[in-house]
Amino acid sequence: MANNLKNEYDMLLKAKKGKYAVGAFNFSSLEIMRAIVDAATECNSPVILALSEGGLRYAEPHYIRHVLNAVLEMTDVPVALHLDHGKTFDIIREVIDLGFNSVMIDGSSLPYEDNIAITKKVVNYAHKKGVVVEGELGVLAGIEDDVSSDKHLYTDPEQAYDFVKKTGVDSLAIAIGTSHGAYKFNGDANLRIDILQQVNALLPDTPLVLHGASSVPQEYVEIINKFGGDIKGAKGVPAEMIALACENGISKVNCDTDLRLVFTATVRKFLAENPTVFDPRKYLQASKDAMCEFVKSKITDVLKSNNKA
Ligand code: G3H
Ligand code: 13P
Ligand code: ZN
Picture 1 (tube, rainbow, N blue to C red):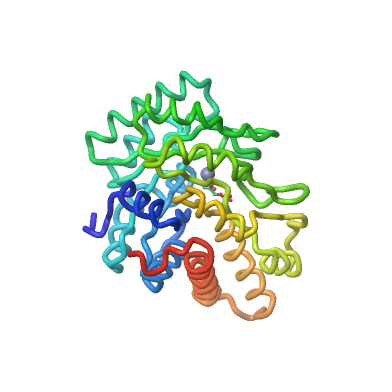
Picture 2: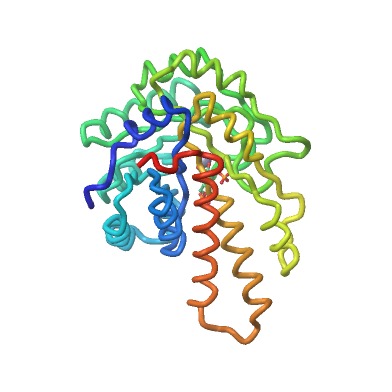
């Protein structure tokens, strides 16, 4: 892989000390990948390209290996390639062989001791290969890949300390009230910043990760609903809450749903307003530009990682 692939732990510890966060943006297509990298490059910001196992199967490993290398050659900003929500040892091994330098092992749905065991096994394997590891403790409400839960199971700060010491993970995803997807809150949004502060005080050198951190911009929800979609009631984490979390120890912010919304809204609107167009380059270009603008504003206005490359 190109040499601007950077150690994610160093990237995140610097962010934690500087009270900003690095965005981990999920991609599954060339348009999304290029929108993220172009935005980070324009903002002179470090960035994490995140791929789920579903994303890897969709894009296909052989293409991913070569396309990622090509994308990395097009930028000078620090980039980490990260597996999002790895559930098994096999997928961890597969992406490390593909050149990923960061993996998440998500044992959060397992009994505590089993989570420790699989996480430790991954840490031992990954560290020998120079790859950093993110673990997860606590359960986010909603759907995490094939795991779903009706209720939040907030991370216990003492257990978080014990987990990091026993497993040797480089970073830790914690549950403080966010959830995956486009429907995050029934009522008002609320994050347990008090839990975050307690975990942060116990683990000053462990970057903390916020999953389910999309803000679900209402302007895009409205466009989707106006042009034939039906995602009424979609709601995300307000940008100011993400910013507050970053000031209190979150240094990696995961975002997938927002890019899906921006992509879909732009395609729906473009095709509705241009009924004679059938050249995919036209609406994919519009979507890529819109996603790039969105990522730039997230980096600059919320994460504050601009000019930190
Ligand atoms: O946290 C999960 C990510 O949004 C990936 O979702 O498994 O549908 O690719 P996915
Ligand atoms: P969102 O669904 O809020 O974008 O969260 C994505 C995520 O946590 C990926 O791991
Ligand atoms: Zn997640």
